[in-house]
Length: 366
Ligand SMILES: [Zn+2]
Ligand SMILES: [Zn+2]
Image (cartoon, rainbow, N blue to C red; front, top):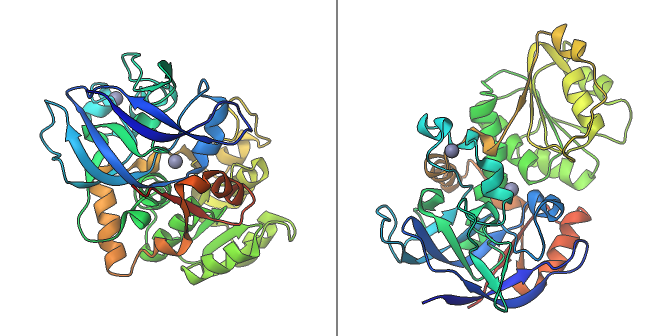
């Protein structure tokens, strides 16, 4: 029997979401039905409106309780408290190697609007619409998710905080700990201290990166970055970026991470590297956009530029590690969270776009 849910449907780009009743498809054997208690809003939800056929239901950071499992599900049970993280196919060479963040079908799985077999998970007034966003479409009271992307969580942290972690926090922390493998006494600069960048700052502080420099345009965010471990802050509108960073790290930095999507920030992230340095990027603002830097910037420094997906993290392992660190007070990601009722989703997006809120989390009252 199919199930009705309330979802925030986007019918047209740049228009508000409307809360509507949708119908969820039957579960496939490897799927799980989650009653969502909260969902984070992530930058990709904003960027994706141009990539997915509309109408669509977005959202990819669900926290909730399992209601039902498919016939082949073995590791998840009804009643489990869970997070839904990013999906992977489970059958490509990267998935076989235990690197799901490199899944060769990642883009189809996150932006395809359907299951991999092309079937729809959501119907609106009898018509199929784009669902299965990150194979979850969590701006809804219920989500259909793949068992392998569902992470049972331990501890008693409420869903309204848990929902900040499955993409944004995981990506920022994983970028530092896994993708770039920053070690103690390496210098690190993070461009953009939104949810991903602040998570990178917390992780950099955790491993002892020093100096640990935060770059942004919003003074309040820079102040929070300092409270969360940044040793220095640079306001991007305060002058020439590379020169300001080299005032702190004279020979350049060992590691830079670009999270803002700004082309000048990426240029500075590469230009501020020391020889042998590593630059990670977690965002590209427009597919096909050209960036104004010369490859010789990388060659002459023997530097590395690396694209990072989901912090190179395996969710089942990493999310619970982050939650353990949080319980010990060592990963205080709750400092960036602001809560909104589901019915206020449009205000949450406006606040995020305007920079008033770092990490919006929607709460579902059922
Ligand atoms: Zn795969
Ligand atoms: Zn995301």
